Image 1 (tube, rainbow, N blue to C red):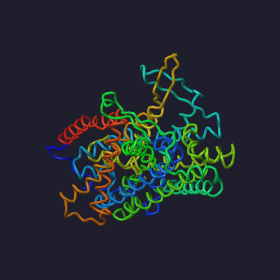
Image 2 (tube, helix red, strand yellow):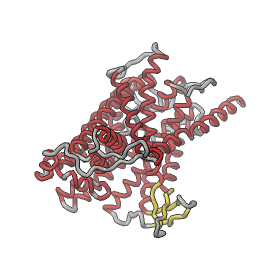
Image 3 (cartoon, rainbow, N blue to C red):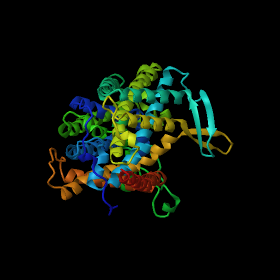
Image 4 (cartoon, one colour):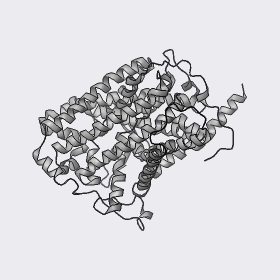
Length: 517
């Protein structure tokens, strides 16, 4: 989508005076690792096992995710070295295409991607804290649900309150400076990495189940109970087939494409270190290296964790475990009922550290947008500690809103059930996340053609083959999602496109304000 009007002045060319360059290579790697590892690795294996239908399929899904994620990180390194400024991917898209594309990414990130993920992780933190303290319950109402029309409600349960308090606490800590934020990140990332290594060790060496190992690895590719995947809209059913992993080559292609939703989302947020580039001591080197080291560490741990699940539990149990709590089931098989408490502690640590990294990084994108006149003006300022305090506050307020708003459904018997708005929104944006990743990596080709004379301290690994393969793979997964998860993929696209009129209005407002000075 080209623009004929003059572009907004590039924030990349302006001074970023005031930021504190306190993030070293180790700190940056910890931000990547800590932001990536949340609660997904402990639960999504169940869905993936259902979709692929085999132990080999479960492992291969994570290997494919690893190849995609690591190749993306190695490609992003070139952009990170070219534009070592606050805002990361927002800046890359703005410079590769136009301010509009940067805004659409920043809009979607603030509206759903970053904030929705933080809301989900916060409620996950509260949910697992409730395993240790049963009073933290989703049914322990402080404010009973108040209907907001037929489909939505607002409520405050003890579980929601704990999630909101977590957000407020971490937001406050991060307003006190990047040094404190990175210290918290280093401590909790180290702790949860040790926890995940412990889970892997216990599963492979202590809890190894001879029956499960024989069942899973003697029939590594035998497909059991695969999930049937139907076209995502009625109009597609006349020419798009209903498939399963056992339906031949196309069925496998679709099954692995859909399975990537859970694994890719669990491995997301590796790009967050780019948002903080203005605070990295040696950004032209360390942002790229942090992405590479962090993704390699996490993907290795993720593959080993799934291997540990297969050493401990037969595939059928992985497919049918309640609420997808595969890691809890694995520890329960080793330790009995106390295993659930051990897993709860590990996830509490993991989610706390994950949200600290996401909160720290996400506010830098709002800051960069505000510097371009595309967000609330106050978010483009730094507080006395050298961090975007206002951006952190706005971000925290929106996350709290996402936690409090509930979806509302009434079944045939008249029973009302309540869901979480952020869960629906996160389902919608998986397609958008892939779209922006593909566009950003394609931006490497665009920038090499448009601006060949720019200094490139780091060049994308395997260029042009590796970046091109990533773009092709991402487009293939997006194609599958459009066919088989049409409603959610389409809704994600709508969320992105709603940013266009907002962008035009903000640009006009910004120009009018500039003309008045």
